[in-house]
Length: 240
View 1 (cartoon, rainbow, N blue to C red):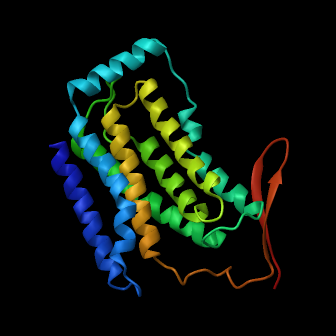
View 2 (tube, rainbow, N blue to C red; view 1 turned 135 degrees about the vertical axis):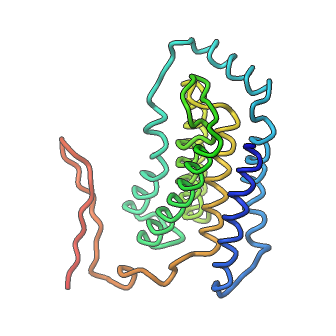
């Protein structure tokens, strides 16, 4: 049942994005194929181990090693780390592939799509979590973290490789703690990671709304961080 739902949703996604690609000026499928091998492998592996005895034994061993009462909320924060890295790098002037507005645009589009797929699968499969709660498959935290990490990777892989790959370290740690916290199975994490990477790579390949950027040609626009003892945020300055 889960296998069918996964493949149906992914097929719908790919077909929909391929129809959008008809409006893309420079289609080069050879450029996309290498980028989707890893996420497809993750998804396939996740489907294979789903509900397997290996998966159940692994989860039991993890909980035995950390203790039945173990719980940490670090995964609630680590999933946002690649986003923080992205904008901190922009503020520090690290050269990126795209303007900060385009980064935000692709980040939002990717997360909207991956969130829709993830939550759709959760309600279709109704797989129980290791702790007995519902909606286990796939892991939303892991999907979100790997989506953000893939945006970071695409933006800085050419100019700051260490920064680009660091997002995946945070994302993998997020998925690991979802299992340590007894919130998700291995298959949930693998498929979540695959969805996050796959969708974001396709978004960066198609570059939807590429021409829409009201700030790109503005030399009088500034994004400035604001840090106080009570809050952290940003404000912008635009001269007319």
